[in-house]
Length: 373
Image 1 (cartoon, rainbow, N blue to C red):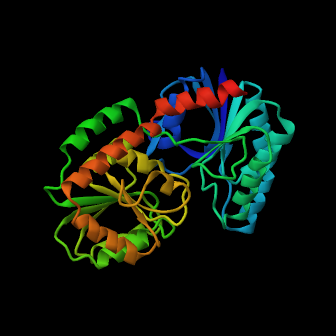
Image 2 (image 1 turned 45 degrees about the vertical axis):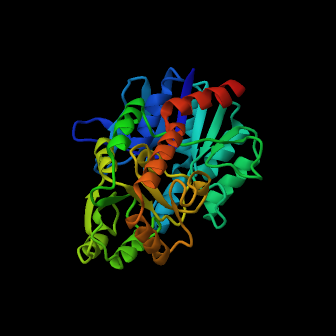
């Protein structure tokens, strides 16, 4: 079987002349070769410099079909989006003729017109992957429209979490992020990780207000403890210089590492006791599953389906209400956590993270999507 993946994942040409793309998506497609014999990825090609987190495909059985990067805040840039629609549809149409299935990754800007196109004008087998917050109350208009479309068509839709009112074609799926190698590494890490040394924390994601970096730094301003070792911030964004400067004024040591390759992020997880993600809105971040595999206890906002996996004070901490005062209180609880509870949390989370392996994802895909079409 052959698969077409339709997404807005940015790709780049690195210094070696290779096509590379956002690491998590590229890795997911690499593992989909265990289900499909050949994959075509219709996605965006950017002329920006490739970030360290970008990866190449591991096989020549994955073919990249480039789309022109469009968009921006100006009127002319928005008009340019509209002008590119015929070219996007043409490339999608020609690619669909080569495959047996498609996967469309939503929500994304081009979903506004590609979901209707696929629903009304294509009889190709396929499914939609909605990676955002399925229950977001005040979603952007474009995202809400795509969610409405997906609720009112017949193809399967994989979503984050389980919801009382989800349509029958919407299937709850975990986002894959863990290899067999990472699982094996995790077993050794959680055996050796202890509270005997200072406690390390990490944040992994875009450095902006929406992801809660402001909340973390405000809470850290109030910390008066020598129990915290280092707080690592992994990721980038326009506000990084501002946050980095703020970090130098704290009593806590902060390290802003920028974008890192996956293996280096894993090394940070191995050194940390907690991962902190006070996001205002999420689907289910892959980094939660990754960090749990390496013994990091989640301190996370109670949005979307996150609370379906993280139970407050059982296997992590929910920041509710979402503010710096709540987070400060949780930090203070972490300073006093006892070894048996910490170990119990680590083991429970390691066991749960099996659901975030690529092998588990492929088995679910084969059982619930591909064979049901």
